[in-house]
Image (tube, rainbow, N blue to C red):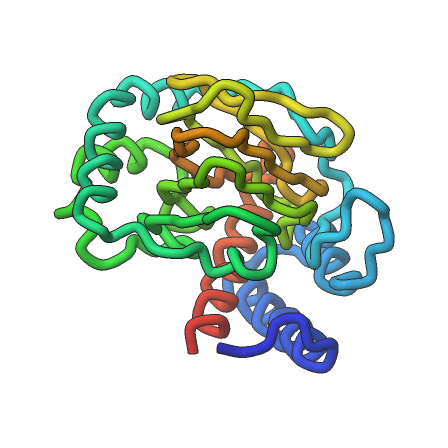
Length: 254
């Protein structure tokens, strides 16, 4: 895996993305002006100094509310399968297939952070359709789930604290469906703390600084986590970000 935090790697990556984006837009007959925000987000990659928002790729002109008020009716279609999704999560847990989150050592100051990836960087993980078919079926109702990024079961042990951090881009919103929530489990996004509730969604902009606190005790916190496109993106911008995510996925996995 490439070191995506190395400045020289980031600079080369941005230049390559800009070239490929230009080639793609010319082939598709898309005017450059339709992609101005995408190009600007690439040009400014890694230069952000905001105290609470320092993700790598921040595309200008998007509503940057840490807790956006948005209508996402397809989330109700997913939560309609809440009990089946919960059953499949517990089956994965019993099967010992939920492993340590790749950023756990860096971000979990104490406790255990584990995950079961279903979609990773816009691609369905092998064997997931067999392991959790009802969950995959429900996730397929999310527009562009094959492109927008991540979907997984996320599990935190009692007493876990996840350090303040930012997601790498603001072109998506992060959504959590509470599956198993101990009382007092909370997440701060920006300057506001909120609590999960079983069967309900929390929707936030994870390019804004956020952290997590799980109370001590015996119960683990579990959510279904997924990404959706930021509703402020145009259809053309979403197509461009599909291309970029495909590029980033190949770079990260190679």
